[in-house]
Image (tube, rainbow, N blue to C red; front, side, top):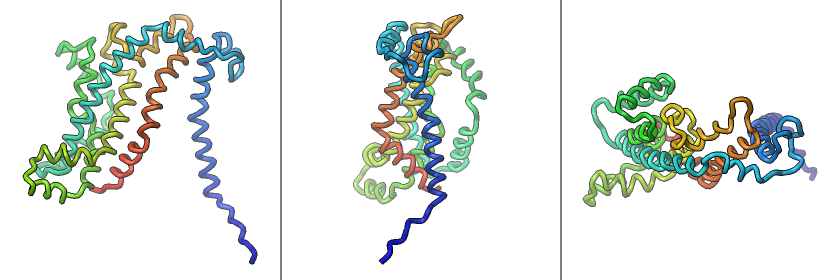
Amino acid sequence: MQMSQPKFNLTRLLALLLLLAGTAIVLVPMLWTLSTSLKTPAEVFGGGFFPKKWLWSNYSDAINAIPFFRFLGNTLIILVPVMIGTVASAAVCAYGFARFNFKGKRTLFLILLATMMLPSQVTMIPTFLMFKEAGFSNSFLPLILPAFFGGGAFNIFLIRQFMRGIPRELDESAFVDGAKRWQIFTRIMLPLSKPPLIAVSIFTFMGVWNDFQGPLIYLNSNDKYTLALGLSMFKGMYNIEWNMLMAATILIMLPALIVFFVAQKYFIEGISISSAVKG
């Protein structure tokens, strides 16, 4: 019997080429950043793509050129409470929208979703003036406090969609056993909602770790700078130390990459399951 030859699939070929092009668009800048971090200042623009001699000392020099560990501590001071506040407050709000029935619930949820369409630049100045009048300027509080009030509409929406997919029979069984609302939330809903909670945690980590605009607006003292803001110190009045800047960028980028690859299973699961739930 003559074996049939596989048919040429133009659609799959185009999809593969598109994926390869997208991968190249993402990887080439990262490779350039890594390559530049190992070059001498003269090789940054005068040499080839790869350094002639790999200068690993650029990384230690970059750490010593700025108060790296002080900036790291400042970043963690903001990051830890923001992650706790965002996940906790978003989970509580999502539980209310997913399980409670109250007057105006649908309207309130639509208003919440509408805030996702509002650019942050619209509320930037009023928010800054509000925190300034409260005496919180040049402090970490304006960067931390908003996280304890829902942490953003998208986070609430994501967790709410997942919780709606959890069978209500679990709640009813818990009520029969004498459990209260708070016990159901902490002992049933939160453990079952681990995928979206981890996804929100990753989003929050990435946002705070890479945030430049927030610290730039609210922090005036150099000793309170975060890592993202500290990168600007490599930019001088007349020149930029590109090799040192790229070395510091690689060091700052590594934790975010590690967190994503370690937790990507839960990240993808939380996004896909929440997106599949209707209502």
